Length: 299
Length: 274
Image (cartoon, rainbow over all chains, first blue to last red; front, side, top):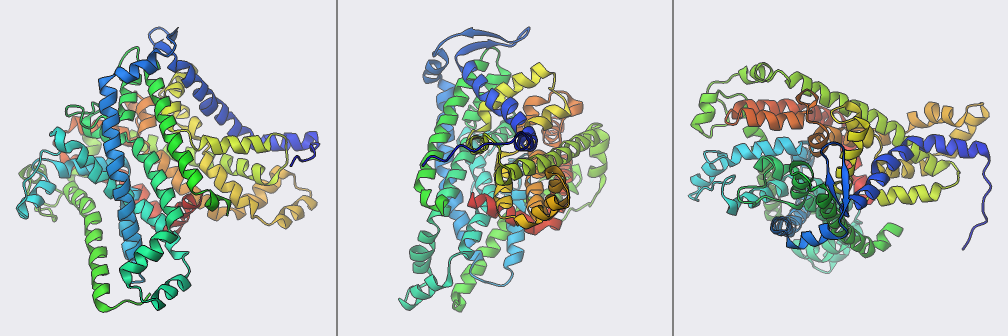
């Protein structure tokens, strides 16, 4: 359906663009231009010394990506991280929300407590966990108390990434729990009543009523989780002092992009290419989610 | 939902166990910030300090002369950035909801598309653009690129779509211009939406680690997350100092939360409905 072209008065145009001006300025200078610039950079070798100079290299940066061992390690670490953290935090968020929604006394108190990690910055949380992960620290002591062996959490390549996973599941689940909780409160009681008449117990109601009703929210939570986990950076950076160590075990894609862009010389174009590939991966995931939950967004 | 006794007990056990799991890191951090270095080195696991001391909170300001400056930088950037966001996101959201002008639809689609661009793509070019502008190591370099936020433009648009038209019509009869109507009538009535937005924008600026890491290299211009990371490097085993500094850093957001608790939930719920 094509609408009749509307005529605008000069006043309307001026008014509309006055209101939009700050947004248009930032969009143009710090988002649209950078995206085009990033595409340009990804086809060039960039030297920063003495003002940026660009040397056209065609698809070299993208080809190099396939042969870069550190990129493979970073990708593998990121995938491991995504595959474990996203389901774990989603499940934890769902269970906590369902438990909180059961109408027990003190719900408000628990909500406030659970929300604390969401309020705290990643830098502070990472420092607190590094202190707890200390070889002589709280976590190893607690493990020792129940007869389990301690780990060199920060120094052992086998456990450094799981240490970050544990920390981030703990710190992001409550945020998603809040989203679930809001959705749970929108499920009409009549649905549960019907299930009750059919003789469903608590777990049956959870699996056969709650979980299906929450499907659209779950897909949203999963995609938000995917976007967030693919971009893991702060925690790895602080944990490893920017190196991605020990032995590249906490090296993530974004940390590697950062290193190539700002720590190594002459690899900025390569870093831009890597960032574009990451963006495409995330974009595909987002589009898939949009497609799955289309009926939801249309209301 | 009614449940039997045993079911209730299990639910309470889950709730309490997870509350403990959430609280332990914070309690441990608070307790460490009041301990002496001696006690920290011993590595005992008592949550109540043997020699309770406030000295760490004094020492961090003495040992790290820039600490107050970092605190100021963080506050300045977060507060100015939040005010600009509130203003500009609302203006854009209002225009997209209420005004008619050419290119409105394309702008709206553009803003929705921007929501999907991960920050890593624009991070490198932004660095080069800020470098060209001479904005590295400046407040404007930290604030201007983030003075609008596509998510909240979208949120404000949704808010203004449901805003009663009659109020604006009355205002225009009284001879107010659109800008006048917006500032005098519309914005004051948008307080709940603004409050939810303010909290999230403020937290975004306050907690941001990556942007300052890239834009700022001058120690005087550090924000707290960056300063904290440097501080940790300097006082590597002085966990009593590091934890005290972390607590100072966490306080402002906790205070915000204490006052604006309900807007947090509102803001998150909105994110879920996007």
